[in-house]
Image (cartoon, rainbow, N blue to C red; front, side):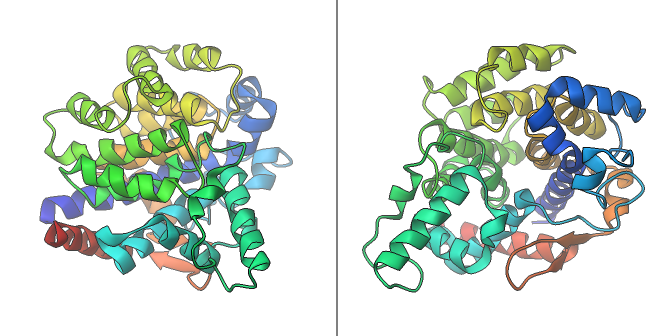
Length: 354
């Protein structure tokens, strides 16, 4: 498990670093668009983006994430992307391969503050609370099919995709199992391509340690989703644009009618950035500078990059000092070393349960 431990450490480091990179410019990108993001990064002297984002006083990035900018990080600041990765760890520690969608629902009500869920997750959360209220139940009412919560207008957006990474990390060489676990989690709030995007990310990550190349791992990930799905087409588009400097522009143009937090456009950007860059800073920097859901894409690219087993450069990890803050109830701040140990233990448990 020594090699897997190194991969899991790098995956945590990459996911956290990529998330913190994209966090300050998330709303700027979503609300004002890619041109505004590019203009800001240019004014900040941060193009190409190869370090944490410099914060210009009085701007939206400085107001949104005042502790996540270049020279200001002392820990990984709370973010929903990292909340969900820790929550997946908690779920697998408790349930292992027996994880079911209802377990995910109960964990949300136990750990997730209502203010820390968005779009499909918020709609599913409200549905859970409403049903509990109707039945005077504490938590999920007996007999309630929690997958009904996925009947919401955001169920093909990015939320499930950002919850999926850890399911791949703990299933090295077993993409089918990673896909199954991610699918059970995603089903609470998502359907269709919302689920397929999550399944692909988990299966891709699981395939990397045993695959002969990143391309081979990607093929294994694609094998776990329908070949005629929008998610498969998004991966194909990102793959076709990999290595092209203007590939992100082509992707944004192709999906110009979609929300900036949809699964498909962001999945295509993740694929483009990961396949097109051998350097960690270039991979996460390029995907964040490409816009759309910047913190989510930085986190996903960083985690998948780390699963390749190459160390994340210290320049990215030193600023947050192994300190991982979350907004999950009762947890506060966690230590990277502990998260790595616990993730490896889950991987060992799943291997025994096979």
